[in-house]
Image 1 (cartoon, helix red, strand yellow):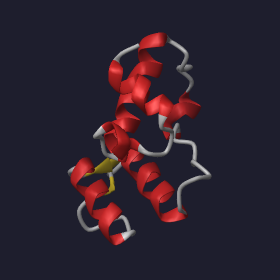
Image 2 (image 1 turned 30 degrees about the vertical axis):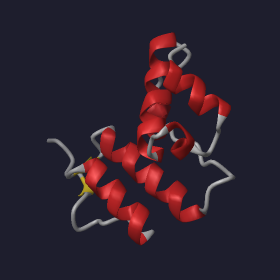
Image 3 (image 1 turned 180 degrees about the horizontal axis):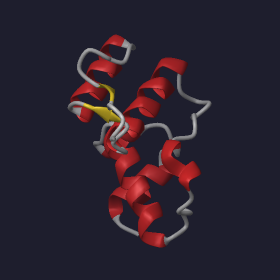
Length: 103
């Protein structure tokens, strides 16, 4: 296990203690899950973010939308939209909106 992952696990809910943002910590943990093969490959995993009860609702909503954006369900600059959501507590749908369905 690398140092960042170890730090994130020792300080759950406090990515700042590891010098990371919430999005960076989430990406590191998600990469670890993918590398270990503990993540199933079903279609139900598209919305794989599970709300953290320790976080306020707005933060969970930001993380859900960021995950959807990173999965290609939204179009726009995903990380920039997450940063704005963290500051304003509202997802900026004018910058990152649901992607148009492919034909």
